[in-house]
Image 1 (spheres, rainbow, N blue to C red):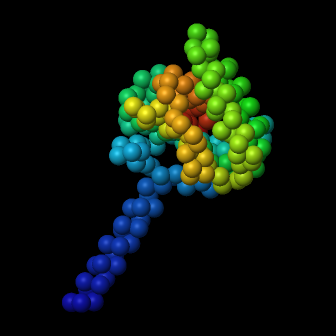
Image 2: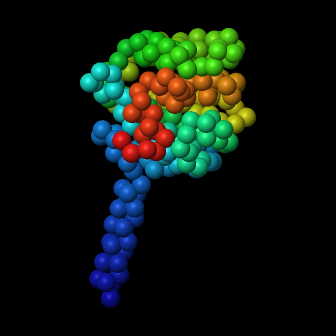
Image 3: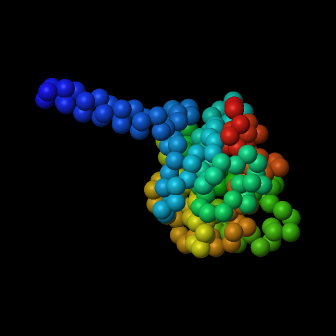
Length: 195
């Protein structure tokens, strides 16, 4: 009887382990959780993919939202917290990454909003310049938290004060989801379409 109970406990433990394992997705060796908790709100993985530059894999991006979305407009309109998580696949000078984000930001931001977004863009550029270098395996998140703003966390450390303007978060997300995204295939996978 005791042996049967031990076996049942071991089996239950293995099933829990398998359940935890099944709750992750592997993208280019980066393990992504199916869901994350952001300040008490459960977000689900909407989609994830690889950012390529020419033939090189640069980073894995993962988009988290409260309820699955299929279009950029649905994502921008979604209420509640949202997250973009980036994990580097190669070493990159942070200044270079900041410049690439600034270019993507400018190419996708609605013209009427750009002047109001410039202070946030300058601050964001400084956040990445201060990092000096991001190496393969380093990660950062960009979170939208209603009532707080956009919070950027690099290597587990929150970077300065939140960016208060809701337009800033959506403009930042347009780097990946806008009309001129950083990577078209990545845009599709972030929106849950098969790669």
